Length: 129
Image (cartoon, rainbow, N blue to C red; front, top):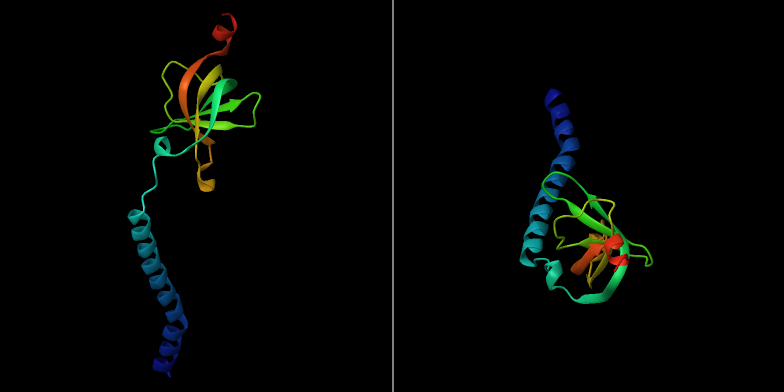
C-alpha cells in the first residue's frame, strides 16, 4: 500500500515537473532566436518626423547607471526620449529643440519616441534674441 501511495503521489506531481522542464527548454529556444536577430540601434532607424525649434520641457528619469532624458513638447502631443543629450541641462528646464524622430516599436515607447537632437537651447535664452 505504501508503494502504491508513493506512486500515485509521484504521478500526481509528475505533470508539474514535465511542465517546468518544457518551459525551460522553450525559454532557451526563445533566447537563441532573439540573439539571432539583433535589434537595430535607434540612431540607425528610419526618420519618421522632423521637429524644428519646438518648445518643450526636459525631464531626467531614472537613477543609477542609466538616466533617460525625456522632452515633453508644449504644442505637440509628443514625448521624446533623447538619445544624444548634451551635458549642462537640468530636469524641468524649458528648451527649444530641433531634431529627427526615429522609428519606435510599440513595445519600446515606455519613456517616449526615440529622438536624435540636432539642436537644443534654453527657451528663455532663445526668446530674448
